[in-house]
Amino acid sequence: MDDYDVIIVGASIAGCTAATAYGRAGLRVALLERHRSPQAHKTLCGHFVLGGTHDVLQRLDFWQPMVTHGAAVTTGLGMWTEQGWIAPQPDSAVPPAISLRRSKLDPLLREIAGATPGVELMQGHRVVDLLQDHAGGVRGVVTENGEAGHTEFRARLVVGADGHHSTVAQLAQVPEDRAPNERFLFWTYYEGATMNGPGDGQVWPLGRDVAICIRVDDGLTQVGVFPAKDRLPEFTAERQAAFDRFVGHLPDGPSLAGARRVSNLIGTTDYPCIRRDPAPRPGLALIGDAATASDPVPAVGCGWAFRSAAWLADATAESLAQGRDLHRALRVYRRAHRFIDAYDTLGRREALARPPGPLQRAVRAAAVSDPYISRRLAVFAMRAAPPSVLLNPKVMIRAAVASRAPKPRGMQRTRPADHDGVPSRGPGRRRTE
Ligand SMILES: Cc1cc2nc3c(=O)[nH]c(=O)nc-3n(C[C@H](O)[C@H](O)[C@H](O)COP(=O)(O)OP(=O)(O)OC[C@H]3O[C@@H](n4cnc5c(N)ncnc54)[C@H](O)[C@@H]3O)c2cc1C
Image (cartoon, rainbow, N blue to C red; front, side, top):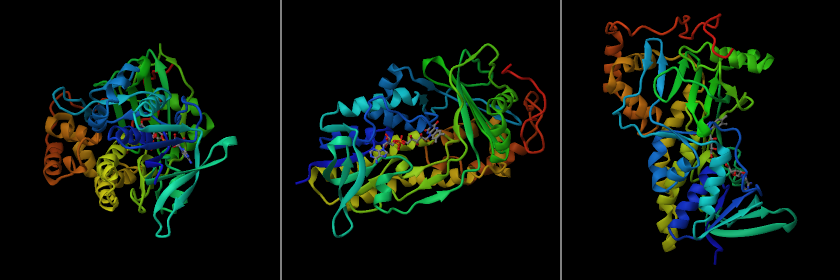
């Protein structure tokens, strides 16, 4: 007799989501987390959860508690282009995004999961080994819990929700597919910043570099830069000054003159993309970053963690409850995960930080004046439909034609750009002083 129906390793976004869903399906769940503190949280995360996750957050009753804890809801992002701003369409039906810093989000999710009947949240349990049968199936885990020593847990399904370094995947010898990321990133939070672009947040795809400005909880504004790695020496020499310079030169960038910076710069200089089979062995599934750790630039990871966890529970809960073989259910999960795989393939190309190609440029240029294309671009950016919502022949032809049409007056670019589409880095209007 197994101790539990499911063992979930890692009580962060993916783990808490899966535990909540399984608990509500009436299953016995062990949710194991290496950190002892209920306040433990991931620090290296921009926590902007794309609108494509809205349905799952609503369905699991996470959305309202997040809002109650102060989350900022973003209904539309403006995107800067050389031809002008792509402003969000008020009637676009693009689902809203949400942002709650991880210092609040992670404890909240743990509280919800831990209070779900059937879920036993055990903190201070670091998984150090797997229990396996002769056929290579995973049957349980071994944890190390300080002075209490080692404990064995058995279940029909073990779920690795233990992040991009996934100990569970390593112990199960799951091959990993790595791809380089040619950008680095830093962000910080401001109190009293004013946005100057359209929408309730802005994105600047600037040739090879990217920048963002987003509202987060507590009325703060997050400003982030994602430069190509050839600018790393500039940031290594004087990080804060390089950051301020970058932000100060953003066309229609935020006004920071009267604002107060309330955190240090947070970020990393290298974050490769990692992908693993989400259902790699009998009795084993991977969710969240353990399955796919994507490029942080399009802000997909938290959404993938919520969604892959929900999809796994959808695919397997009934088979687990009825004691049926899990093979088919795990195949269903792997199929659902293809949604993420498709975007991750595109994301890996984007992570090479190459200048935008002609079609990408045409789509952005056309979206400035064509609501049909801008809506599809927004749905794509929010990961609210498969990539074909934008990447299909009809949209591409329409974009190519529209981008060649003469521009109406008033649609000129908002700031001179160099040959690469990158705004001039020379002296200009600065807002950080
Ligand atoms: C710089 C940066 C910026 C980002 N910005 C965004 C953004 O704006 N929007 C977005 O959507 N995504 C963003 N992401 C991605 C996002 O942070 C991750 O995709 C997300 O945290 C994945 O959640 P997870 O639950 O799968 O893993 P994690 O949040 O990493 O959680 C893993 C959990 O497993 C636990 N654990 C690990 N090993 C063990 C073990 N052996 N035993 C027991 N427990 C264990 C850990 O303690 C942790 O609680 C960003 C990532 C980076 C690096």
